Image (cartoon, one colour):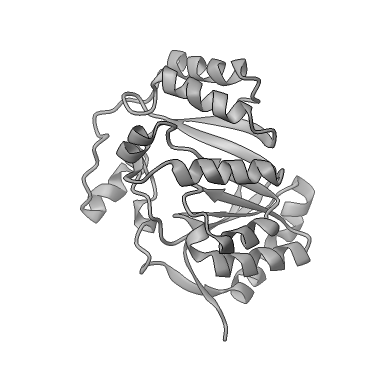
Length: 243
């Protein structure tokens, strides 16, 4: 039986989701409901386009030379790619057979035995941590932060290379005391290669309106340079490589 995956879209020459030039696959389906999500059209699991691993690999291999010479590869993003862990495991296994670097962009909210098999074929995990305090995380995502923190610890225990992403949203995730707590937690994990602060933007707001969802951050401004630099300084003081 041929396994099918549900893909929202692909970006064939991405440069923001891992090292080098990357083939980025945005998987359909996500259990979180982040207030600042710019891809709310990936939330529903019954959407997207059905594809096989062979179909994806045929397209991926068209860009293999770009990946090779730039130090790039394939990135699974979303949505939450680990919702389709079986399909993703198969895809990443094929990528490794082809000598293609693999990166997993995830919220880490799904930690079950089967997802560990995906990690075996993953070269880099890009972990999005939405907040550190559980109440704040629930406000941002409607879910608990506990699985994400356990996921981070697991990756540290197996020494899997990891990048951390943190979205800085004025009035929501810019509490410097909480950022200090997160930085302290991350400083104890020795597999983190970099921490990236992503300033809040509203480029996906129109999607919320088209889908009929309430967008609570319509009046929220982008963070100032001063706030961004202060947040970066906190991570730097914890000896983390901040971008």
